[in-house]
Image 1 (cartoon, rainbow, N blue to C red):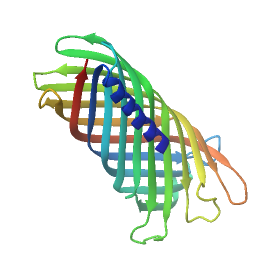
Image 2 (cartoon, helix red, strand yellow; image 1 turned 135 degrees about the vertical axis):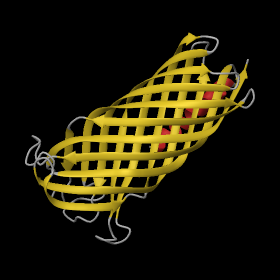
Image 3 (cartoon, rainbow, N blue to C red; image 1 turned 90 degrees about the vertical axis):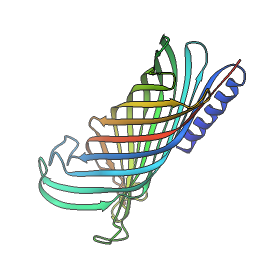
Image 4 (cartoon, rainbow, N blue to C red; image 1 turned 60 degrees about the horizontal axis):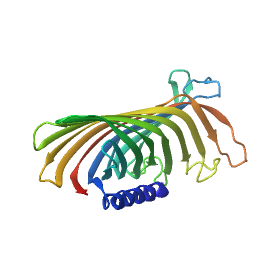
Length: 298
């Protein structure tokens, strides 16, 4: 992911270099607050049986604080380039772990509620767009690009209810091509609104570390793979302070979902048993505010 961040930084530098020759460049940056909920479960077999839900983990109210930065360059009268970066650090959250012996979450064999107050969230994307409609007070743009979202999640026992040495992790990676539609609406001379929606075609991969279970390898105890999609609506409201500076607030919702996939264990005895991954669901809310700087050169 560090390479992805460096790629975005390089892209921003390229946009700045382009803007020195011609075109318009806008750069926005500001603090970000997120609230994520992620769930995954596995079955007892590759066929999805014995039982159909064998183990289920749910991260809830995982709160993060960080920053969001993006840049948009008007390449021609119609074509645009856009890059975006979000980096946040998790400060609060809970995670539950349930194991079942019978179908449909019957006969609980293990249950635990743990802390998830550590970790990070990273999201990077780059896209090229075309301005299909340009009117006096509004415009409509379509983009196509590629995006990567990663979360570094923890299972901890801060109060030592189970074992204070617990420090297990789950690292996710959602990546693939995306398409975005946005409308830029000038409500008045100062006020603007930008509703948008992104569709993301996803390849999902993850790895986890059960640090307290000696039967597993470390730091990778298991891997997940699956295919899925993401939908991300958002609304940005901007207030123009002058010709160059704009204050904005932005709110968004992220919904990611996969179909069935593979859960692969890495055991110390060298065995690699597989079972059905029933699916992953991520629901996230995001709020941010910041300042956008726009400059035009001839």
